Image (cartoon, rainbow, N blue to C red; front, top):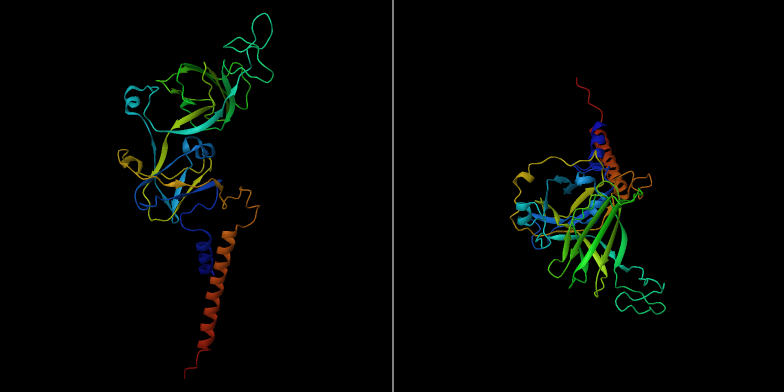
Amino acid sequence: MRFHTGILALFLTPPGLPSGGFHWQRTITPPPKAPLAQACVVLDTQTFANAAPALRDLRLFQDGIELPYAVEESYDPRALESGVTTADDRSLYETSLVANLSPRLNAIAPGDGIDRDSRTHQPLKPGQIDSWIGVYDNIEIPAHVPVERVRLEPAPDSPVSLQIFATEADTTRDPPSESIRGALDAQHLALPFTLGANLQHPATLGILAEHGEQVYRRAVFEMRRRSLCYQPRSASPLTLYLGGGEAMTAKTYSYASSFSTAVERPYATVGPLVPNPENTDTPVRHGLLTQRRRMLLAAALAGAFFIISARRMLVQQKGPPENIT
């Protein structure tokens, strides 16, 4: 019977594959023109927002085997040498979140209490909005998502001053926990800064752009590109597990120590974030066996039944032992 139990365990728990504990998973499709080459995949906002701080619980699997990986961060060599990120930084950036800007409250001329256009000083018509004095937005940002610079759309062709405020979402603070001031113009299209308010918890991020005749529609907050790089075992799709908490840290490999950032690598594509069906805390399970495990269980039971039946048939064919005289 121990033999049959071993077969059942083999079917239900593929070697090396995490059977639970990770809340989420994403499918990674290798580059179609180079599926066996060392490749990278961009780590986006969804990955940072649902993984543990510092990406401590990312685990990569292919063909049931855990793969080592290295996380590469794009940096302008000038910033590495000086320790200062300039407005014309040449690092590669990815979008963290986008704020859709709205006009601020219109100005009131001193003394008459009449809403007037800030540029012409003429009374505003019914329904007219004075957008001269600036635009703003408040937006929620998840925990752990890096924010390292901001730029405006359309790009400014004249000076514009920015104010950025950030406060943890579950607290009420006046003044905000972080306040950044800066300016953009045609030669400086991005303002570098590092947001700290959402390192551990979600935060509310506010931006105010004081401008001239140009009206801005969006503020794009960005992070340096961070890529997960790996050497595949085959051309099969890979699975990235995440959201496992402090106890689900990845194995320690020496892969990162020999990883070279100077090598050009193709980029794989990552699929949507979906619940891990093997996780008992995932709502899609509802406390029952998943479809995949039901199929594996059925196959294991069928195999065990076949082996038991075959052994019985062999015993019956041999018959009772003959008497030896």
